[in-house]
Each structure stands twice: as C-alpha cells, then as structure tokens.
Image 1 (cartoon, one colour):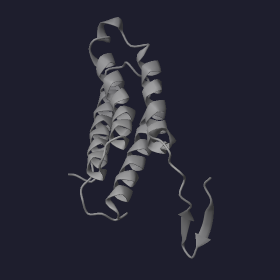
Image 2 (image 1 turned 60 degrees about the horizontal axis):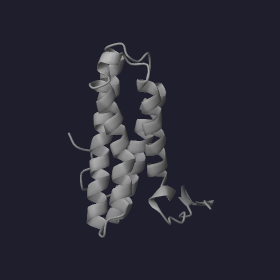
Image 3 (image 1 turned 90 degrees about the vertical axis):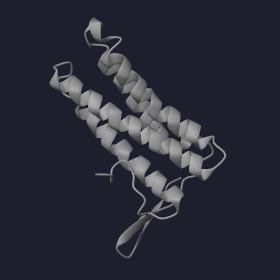
Length: 145
C-alpha cells in the first residue's frame, strides 16, 4: 500500500494503514532483531547464560515489547515515552553486542549492528512524526551529547 511520487526535489511516501502495532515497521524490525539476538547468543559460553546472554536477550525483547505497549496506551505522550524506553534498550543492546565482540564471543555483528542502526532511525522518525514535526527540537536518544 505504499506509493511514491516525486514532488520537486523530495519524494513523498503515501502513508500506510496501521491497524495494529504489528503493522509498524519499527515493531517488525525490532522483533526480527530480537530473534537474531537469540540466535547469536546460542554460541556464547555456557558460563555467560546468566550474564551477558541474559542481558542481550532482555534488552532485545524490550525493544518490540515497549513499541507494542506504547501503541496500546491511551495517550500520545505515553506512546512516545515507551518509544523512548525502547530507544534506551536499543542503545543498551548495541553496547552489549560491542562488548561481546570485543571479548571474542562474536566474530562480527555486522547484521545486528545494521539492524540496530535501521531500528534507531525508524524509532526516531516515528517519535518525530508523533510529536507533529519532522524537525522537532526535542532531544531523542540519538541527538543527546
């Protein structure tokens, strides 16, 4: 249901119909990332099952869960608050994946890192659209020092 047409120098995307949080691209990518994290952590040492494995899995699950919970809330402000919590969980996950890479548990996290970046952009865009302006000056997780 997405259509594009050129309007001078910018491309305008037709809005997709969202009937459920499951229709949101940010939720879909977050869910895929969570599943990927479960697969990635299967090869970690057993002694990490209650350490970094648990933290990676909890952080990754928290992302789509908070998108869904925020969508189900009664107000736009609550929705944005839950999306910002999801952003925080994303930053936590990125850090945990980097630590895992540096200690040698992961040879490379290219796919997960790319998914994290994509997801971060999607969340920032969704928050800005909910705030009513694509150029909102309110800080997001990616714009804070």
